[in-house]
Image (cartoon, rainbow, N blue to C red; front, side):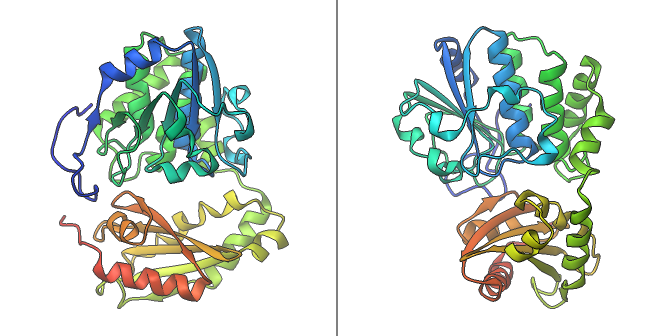
Length: 346
């Protein structure tokens, strides 16, 4: 794992790339019998998998563990196979002033929703993350902006704490790693990521089961939603400085008509982004007065910087932001930030 280096592309001005204070993090964990773990709202595989893996490791050490995430407090269907779900408690049961708070995969305190206030009231806050746009909140940083997933950071901390990986811990870490690497297809997948995957498989992780749950299992209504979203997709070759934009949208009515939870819309962009005529893909998830924008780049536009300019964040090739207004307002904002977004040199 990289432990030193220059500023990461897309990182906020003034912040170095990796910030890995292993000694302080290890000392903080060892000095607390109770640890509160929190990941970002609407958790994905990396957020929930990394948090549960660490929670299981702490429980193996004899610590009392409370893990949570903001409302809506519903585990996505694709992640309900993860070990350690019994560690989860609703956000209302998170102590008001934890002695030690560890956050996972959150680039800013705002991503913790109604639990963001715990960052101010906790005695110590360890931030485990890999987002290029991490704001540097918290008191102890385990931030590796070059890592493909937060799971990379978490596995290293588990190792330093002397906890042996078992199948439940390794399964959570593998799910986190596979989720954020796009099943090891994304550009940030390094030799180190494959080496970590190899170590986890050696413990006994059933990779086919994990990947089937993460990527290849949807309710039938999802297929109808995909058909609707692809049917209304728009290709704008002149946008993003001539590199092209393909976009579509999802509404609350779409989800209600098909009896789908909001998390079922998250994977739609992975299909839309395959259009080779556009470097950037966008899905606008418009539920009420706001639109949640997801952006993906095929490698020539820094969408992380674009989303940071719009008040969001993420990575160079995958990021998002929120807009108040309908999809007409949202797509105009997308076009504007893509015009100014930095280009990535191959």
